Length: 324
Ligand SMILES: [Zn+2]
Image (cartoon, rainbow, N blue to C red; front, top):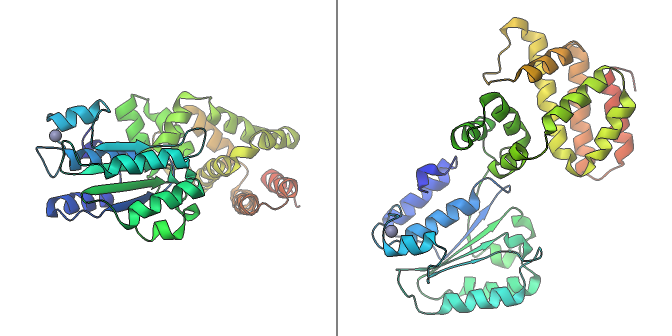
């Protein structure tokens, strides 16, 4: 894989290409952003480039270093990731000790701590010493989806790059071009991904949630609020994502209401999605607008951990178009 095969994150890629071409490499970087957007993939690509014996700007994929890296057998590269959902002191002691040894083959020794939010307090403290006073030629990458949970002392010593969610169009394009998924399915899966290729792949090969969302919307339209409520309860753990997807259907329906045959969201819609959106549009713009507001309130209440069932009840009544 080369830099061009990493989807999105143009700013981050250009930033590192500049850093590498100028030879001004910092000793510790923090990559933060939602999971599955490509943080670890880019960190690995940069690591491979730093270790490459032939090129400074992009790993050659041919030299001894690149070949060893591809086989996960590079003597100057170390990756630590959670075991049983945490990264403990023993794993970090071993990681730090290996990084402190003399380099064997490449101009640098590179370490990646993936899912750094899972470092135990003891492990984070142990790592802090290396981040504060790194051995010469050592470059560290901390990769995390929850930078806020890391100790400030650790954060303040790293150069921080934020990786935002990817645009849905890009995720859909990735699924089509890299995974051969047909355009209409790719678009729907991209909606569920919330801008994460990792999540998109989980949904692409997992259970068909979009069918469930369409069934939920049909139940709402058909007045079966009880069944719709049960479905929400079933997806309680994943509600922020489910509600975000619902909001997209409501927004598309609202556009359809307003634009009628001029409606085109510029993406390939499956026949099922189009029928669902057209049916939803029959609720009328006023109900759709109120439903979108109710969705926003419901999402806010869930994120704030307020009373779940009252928020759900209010939301379902709005969806049915009844005064609550
Ligand atoms: Zn190389």
